[in-house]
Image (cartoon, rainbow, N blue to C red; front, top):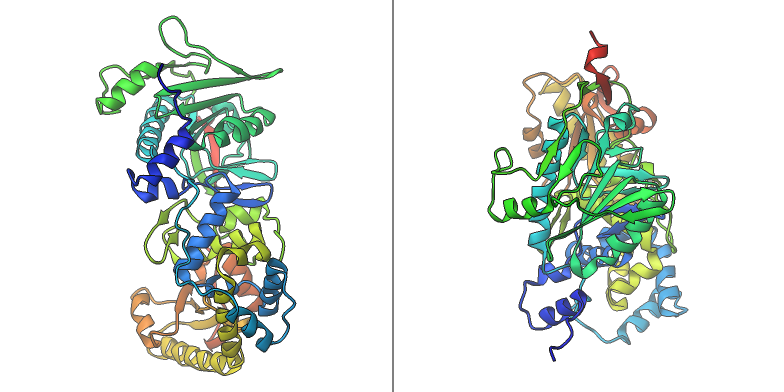
Length: 500
């Protein structure tokens, strides 16, 4: 009698233990950032968020997180996390020295958060998105948005693998450049077989409650589709017609068999032998246009995270304004969103989601004490350090005005903030009336390498930076006032026959 088949997650554990697959596939959660119940979730779970925070602490150093709260708050987090009553520096040193010293932060074994089908997941998602998007656009049914596009459901923001808005929904002008304010007509999730409870239970229930009309779950391991359709009794599982096609989506027919066949044979989407999607062309033509207006987007709000001992809720507006792109690069310094700013934002939102008491449990207490003591010594000299930065900023501002023809230079950020300088602090200079021949890249050479500098032309400032420019900027050199920001735009739906 054959042995019963192991559940996918157990299979993954065995594969991990035997090192049959690369560590990244099982160790890394799905690279997906979402806001659920006020928490910044990675791969759909808080466990994924804790994993990313720990990786960031290992790669960027504890000071990358300590920057977001006063030192005393971190000491209190250690007291609560470890149940100690230390008060003085001597008490902390004695406690830290009593702990076992470990030079290795990483556990020998991570609980699997990913999938050995990560490659199939990515390939299936990309191929399906291109096929679905092409069919929806060509037939004028609506628009298909990819995995980085958010879908706001009340106070949550999900980032499905793909979502479709039909023309009726698009005409409400609630679709924006990076998210929608309306639940989609169709949501598609390509599941990680070992972690599919998130898609089959958590997201299934939330999409059902929001009355998302159609929800497809795709299993790349078994090459299967599940088609869920909303009704007054909740989601009902759909079935294929006798010819093997699914036709519950208005004016669209889909053959799962042809889809898997085309993908396996690597058929070009623009000219497959037999397309998996066929549709009925809609009688009215439409388009989305960028027009003057205001919409929420990355950088709309000033970056002012509130971090506490316990988790602090993140609002949808903060998530949309601060969340980096869903891009995670490995190495000794894991970058989120492909940049230091994206990594900074992610660390702050992770701390808001787990709280400092839980955060300090991710790394040994000895290391926290060591770094906190060092930062305390550095902050004792903060006034001297800020004065040096300010002097260099003024000298650079005068050179920009006198030697490079810049109309005026101001400073925002760390040098106008009362808080001590930290790992993410920069000399953030704001320029206006900038000559066309100005080369910003050459100005960085005016400051020593150890002092980070950021240059922003006022006219190109994000709404968040512009708020600080108008409220807190200190003018260092030059005349006049900064001009800006540039006019904002928003996406607007138009029926083409109505424009005639």
